[in-house]
Length: 292
Image 1 (tube, rainbow, N blue to C red):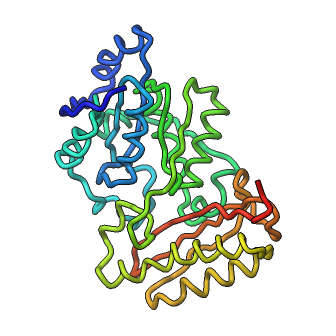
Image 2: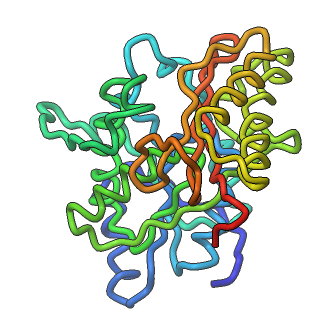
């Protein structure tokens, strides 16, 4: 699977993409897929590199999905620059960029939705009603349109990863979900397309998110077992940013997202915080010292 720089071919229609990939499939070669909403950053590119290393053909979709944005969210101002994104992908050797239109994804009369269950009910699901319905529906559609063998997702959107993995299992979809670690800026902030909305001052304040996670990780590694103490400490660190408004801070079971009270095995810390009105999410695995 050699690294080869070339400009990816852009397709906008499902039938064109299926035709292009037919030979790949018939030749027994593997298709790697990275679904994105564009505004690509190093987090996305790390997924694309993993797909390039592990698969014969790589498809990246760029589609800002309207159905996962709620009323008053940032759909209209979400950054869109297909040319810049395609240029970034050519450096990695992506074969196809799938950039469907809204009518290609949601044709007139579209009326069938994926309704995720318990995994989607809490945290992001509670803060953004309907969000995961939009995510699960568009991801299932993209899987159907592309037909990948392997699909790559970042762990930054931890709950989304679990919702999609559950859907793939529940629907017996013939593909493997490949998670990859969150990519961070040098000061710890998780890379996100929404970071572009932050003013320089709010960008500086946003460091409290990762600082709270790193602090919790150190506490757990050195023996702290009280989830309540961890959440309290994380909230105190985040509150040092004058313009921070917390949606949630939680310590949960990594497989079910149900809150835990005592940390004796690895857990996931989740948080969502608005910094100057910009909503950021982050998470980290917390591992007790005695744990495997």
